[in-house]
Image (cartoon, rainbow, N blue to C red; front, top):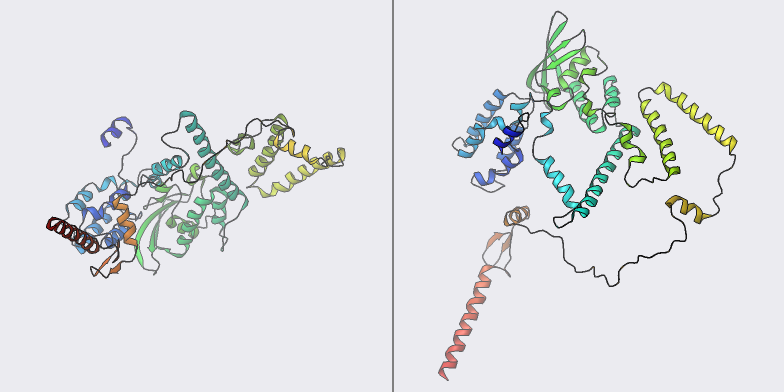
Length: 434
């Protein structure tokens, strides 16, 4: 696969999945999952540390292997020799490299379509299932857009740069940026500052929860156009600024994120408004009257979203809409006749009331007991599930086990088989004596 990717997708970078590597630890090292828990935890803590450099990773890896007495493990040594293919700190120069850490994106897509579709579906059935899956994704996207536009997250300190981040980022990314802003406020401070030709060089101390300095980073700030760079390279990896930069911004009283550091990928307005239009939704009513009504709703929504960052213009928009409403109310002072409920319901669903039904449900459907959708579970997964249970004492073999008790013990089964064999032999001897 590595050779094929390099030959065909020459502008891509092939990496190994960290999840698959960590999953192989119990098989490559003697012991069960519980005995390897400390090793997995230590490797996770080291590998997913996005702030360390490759030199720091190699130093800490050797300390970890020596501390756990695993320097002679062939598999771990082999994984260390190809560390540039799976450890994130070796490809942090790649833009947005942290968006694809494992194969979870591919697995989640497969799982999405497996829920709605199956291998035995025809092409028509697959397309129907595909439309259902895509419509579900669009619904989640519309829900996320609605939450970003109509709700406000908890912001206790009301920092100006935090309010600006709320205006430009989607809700999910804003919560991540909010963490960086607060950590830049509480866990970072400036150690040294030097200035040369309108460029300021800062040394930022990075502390942990115990207020102990764990690392230092260099931040450069050009005060002429607010160009900034940090040695942790968070903007390159994730597309948003890090806590060290926000610490420098706070010191220089910069209250807005510069435009050059606003990645369009995380902008809440990156999708065109027509994507969320009512007319583009699944199973939308194409009746001419409904199309015009939906266009009116879309136009009002587009105007409201466009003026979201200009709250001083919203009262004027509200006044104009109210004037249009007053003109309509003056021309039509009373509401339409809604006494005929059947006519109203028929108008909503787009079908007349008296429609001859020619399709009926089939007779004699047998739903109960028609099989299950349970998949086959392998011995490896059973062992993992059994390991989560507390072992119990078998009073027959006097061992703590997961899979049986004294009624289903192997010794009981052996005793029953021996008794049956003895009875059979005794019956054979008595019959031959006769």
